Every structure is written in C-alpha cells, then in structure tokens.
Image 1 (cartoon, one colour):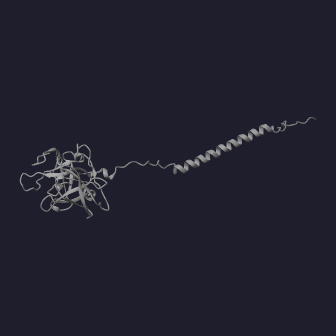
Image 2 (tube, rainbow, N blue to C red; image 1 turned 90 degrees about the vertical axis):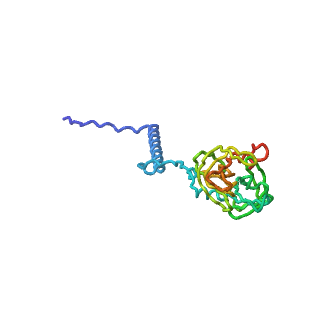
Length: 273
C-alpha cells in the first residue's frame, strides 16, 4: 500500500558566496554611517536654534544717537561752558576791558572779537576752572573784527568747542559770554536775520552777519553763538542800539563761523587756527 509522502520539503539553501556577504556588510556599514551623520546634524541644529517653536532672534538694529536730538539750553551750557573764557585786556585805555573768547582748537587757540584786544599791552585769559594765563595776539582782522589768541598756559582739562553748522532764520541759538563782567552769562533766542551789514564809525562795514535776539551786552563780544546741536555757528561782535546807552534792545550781530575762520592777516583765505 502506498503512503502519501506529504508536501515535498525544499532542500536547505546553500550559504551565500563570500563576495555577496561582503557586499551586504558594506551596505549595512554605509547605512549606519548615514544614520550617525543625520543624528549629529540634528544635534547641531538643535543646539543653534534652541526651541524649534521659538521665533527667530532679531538682529541688532541701529538706534539714533542722543546727540542727534536738539539740545536744551541747559545742555548747551553744560557742553560749551568749559570752552568759554573771560578775556581781560589792559593798556588800551583806562582800566581793563573785558570780553569773551572760545577755545577753538586742541592747541588752546582762542577765537574772539578783535576790538576786545585791540591796542592791548597785556592780555589775560581766565578759564572756566579758574586757571588764568597771559596770552598773545596771533592773528587779527579788523575788517571782520576777528582775532585769535595764544595762551601761555592751558587748563588741566582743555575742552575745545565744536565749530561749524549753518544758520537759518528762526533757528534756536544760545549765547554765552561775560557781559558787564558777569561771567558765563547764558541767554537764548533765535536767528532773526541773515546777511546783515553792520556800519561802524571806523574800520568799514561788516557784511554777511547773523542777526539774533539772545541778549548780549558789553563784555559779551567775542563769545560764541551756538545752535541747538552744540555747535558754534558765529562769534558775537556787536549789538544795535539807536541811543548812546550801549545796552541790548533785542538786536545782536555775530560773524558766521566760516567767515571768522577765514579772517586774519594776509589774503583771508587760510583759517588762522
């Protein structure tokens, strides 16, 4: 009697050849290396970005400098006071004449009005810190009423003023000076007019002046006229008064700083500083 042999069993597979086994191991090794690289990349990205849900960090942005905003009168005073000096000139008449000057260069050169020191046999400078020094006249222009002085001694801390800046009618201005010997008197006003001409008894007319209404009086001559950026835009040289009183009635004049720097002996083209 015949018996069913049941399902026929397949013979066991023969082992893969050695070269196929090497190829498999190479594929597995390459795959492991790729997975390792992906994992490392993910770690680096997470370390750099932090929370993936957090918004991107903002880049630094420029912000306006505080000096770009107009300065108040107290701020102008604080900035310019160390640059303003009292000038005493003796020998040109009875007693001593007083005026004002402004430190206009890092070497201590002082810019002032020529009539403050005209004919003086001795000139003394008093700085904001109380230091005093003799000074000598270096350059002068009677036509522009501008002079520069060279002091023999400088203060412990020298603070030159910032020169420059134009003027427009209506601009805020500050004048710092020593009217009637009252040191560091500070007044404010506006530019009232431009290109004014001042008639003088001697020396000829001065043209191209800035007219302003910040109060000035005898002793203010040579002081700085300052804009609301703390820049010296002119040198005070005169006030107008239809009487012989010589007091301020609301009209002062200043030589624009560009003209003041161009004044001096010679052709007037080279700044005296």
